[in-house]
Length: 350
Ligand SMILES: *Cc1c(COP(=O)(O)O)cnc(C)c1O
Image: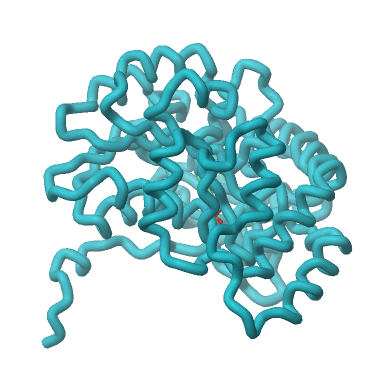
């Protein structure tokens, strides 16, 4: 027998959204449009240098992000998707088996995986009755062993946000000895002015880090670029534990080009936001339970009918992401694709 850690046997595998040939994929929260032409050109150009290692320090993209956010470049760590940065966050905070990571549940499925991979202990706090983070309960769940807290807003998979005022109270309650990570993978889709914006809180809290990604609004899920904004010590530690050359030259060039196309990309997000309200209203009208979403997906709380609903959608050539027996997460896409989802939902026997 190879000396593999036995505890990995109980590790849940990340379940990717299924890709079914010929079906509409509403299972992975991607934007369904391809990258803009200018980004594709940057990718092609960068591909000519694929025989070389990429810039280890991600200098150009880091400088550009520093500029965009008005932050010192030392406060930015770029990673191979923000999922990788989640893993790096556990690695820089947790060393002993009893070190704890607190997060809401249900939330992003990577959190329990990266916690267990590092050999740390997870402490999950149920979402409240409105499918929102229960920040008071999360603050109460922090113990002297807690090293890291993940707060996901908008929350994947329920779409609900954390308000700025409640998050500031939460940071106060948690105190300076725990690293708090605000995962804002869907920030570009947020329209609620009361929702927290992590970038506005960075200067006041050195134990606070914001995660963003190019995978969703910036349409580069396949190229794997995310970044963390925080105190210089946090960013430096993240860079230390990241695997070298994890962000390819193609990914770096594409992300830079995508920032140049921001207006076009954000205009597409605005369309998704309109569709999100239309889809939710239609599902509510049909009698489904759908919390307000600020992301590019909606949560349909179906309980035990989760798996049958997903199977019914698949019969209609629409792939959704089931979390049986809680609910289904449906990515909001183009009007045509959303109509196909709505047709499936309306024909689901209830
Ligand atoms: C999609 C997503 C990410 C981004 O992952 P990448 O690794 O950057 O593709 C991070 N957090 C949440 C909650 C997500 O849903």
